[in-house]
Image (cartoon, rainbow, N blue to C red; front, side, top):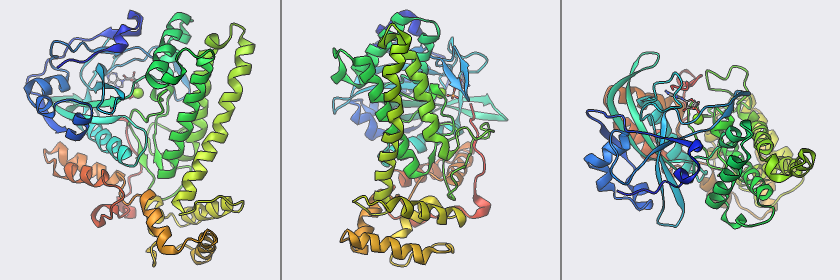
Length: 474
Ligand code: AMP
Ligand code: MG
């Protein structure tokens, strides 16, 4: 096994080298065979003793030299100048069978110089949650980190109670965050900033290499990628839960699945995370927070744009401001598709917002309602005013020459039947903590085929089953 570690070619202040934390009996819980093959890795080797030891962070083969990376970040609006990989390590990187670069990172593999007071470990529950949600997001077509494997450490970790420990192996095109830039900006380390920006450009936006205005173009590309990403989240009712700047990538991939959750009943001010008391990361706030985070990125890039701060601001600001329009445009296109519409008419905003108002007033399930909308006899809880709205919507479809059965075919391709619902995830975790992984396997199979009818998994939770809060579980 040989993995390059390109990030380790950056100056030593970017990272710390990490030794393995030996475990007596790590055990493979799940390997993502298909992903392993896509990455050009041998699933049989990964599932063997050396592979499992590597995936657990317990022993590394010669040719794999892991590091923990340094970053900073705004957490709930407060700037923390040193965060870094406190319970993660970057095993290395490679190029997949499609020619795309990737990195493999372990999460929960033991302490690093960035662990602060943390134990560097992860509990089984959050590892399985990240596995399920990241693989569901990939199947839904959302840019995201992927999960390569989950390994049981055989040890317990102290959380609210003692929990079984686990390690997640995740894959990303890179793990560079807004907070990675903030780390160097906070130190006024312009050389470090430039090296990081050049590295990120080569990795993610190679067309910009050598271009004269490449740092501004890089920012522009990140703004676009994030606008597209957040629009996808919103169209699926996904709530990230901890959109701190250290949890936002410059690649535009979703990263760090903590207290994330999908909406059940539609409510724009919905918050799940138990630590998000002010609702900073509420569902409807996500586009605003994304823009706030991008403003923090813009600040870090100023010295690379122009030696004169005002001149730098003058160039960065319009690019930042373009976020709003790009986001709205992307969200609008997705919402049209969810309603089976292909063209754009001035009255469509009203049609869409009236539909969402109906869902909110009836506390109707977001995913279920969109999925059922095109059915010949939609099975909804009572939606007051639905018949009148439906007549408007069908007239609008007819104006495009689209018959209801054709709309249904289109809508079923974009409105999932199955999402990783919170109550299902919690049931999976409870069973897994008792040693039964059957429910995990079954839910994983369901959420990775999200557009197929699946009567067992598409039903929304009963009111009594609704999960009201999620926990970071770190
Ligand atoms: P998160 O909220 O998971 O994005 O993590 C924020 C920061 O806390 C990162 O620097 C993590 O590496 C660190 N962290 C979270 N949990 C732990 C843990 N159990 N041990 C050490 N560091 C942790
Ligand atoms: Mg994080």
